[in-house]
Image (tube, rainbow, N blue to C red; front, side, top):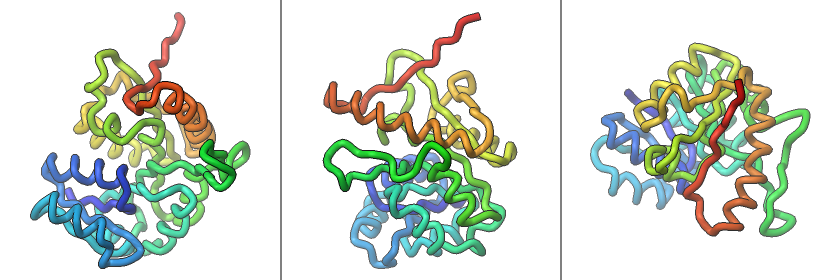
Length: 218
């Protein structure tokens, strides 16, 4: 499959590398087609990796991952263009974290809106699926590295788009019983807000190698 990655940071590189290892052709996009980080990743990832602009990545991908920094995500997706994303599954891995007040972030959007919803409004013909944003990058693509089972959340307005996203998640090692579908894209308000707690847990233990498990009563 051909997949586009928007963003050249740790998350984009981690997901892109895993996808190449699984046999997919991946185009990493950024604002500048000559982005140094993207070029370095292509050199490491090999012949099934390419780099270009946000539009190039969105055009090339049958499925597109948004792995940009949350505060730049709407601009990145808008730059990619609705024509390039029309009808495609856009998997949003970003979080609306605002670090301008100090090292402990606040949400740049929340309560009555979410970044996932903003992206859906920015490119209404795309099918936005929110998932993977509640984890550190290594766990996103290697969930079985933790000894116990743990959960991943997913939401979006289109059930078919979520099913396609789940196919990729399975290839990363996620089991169906560990994936919790929270419903439509407004559920992104909850999973994005959880990241504030994630940050506190990370600071407490100094490691991103953790996740939560949903334990339900009968």
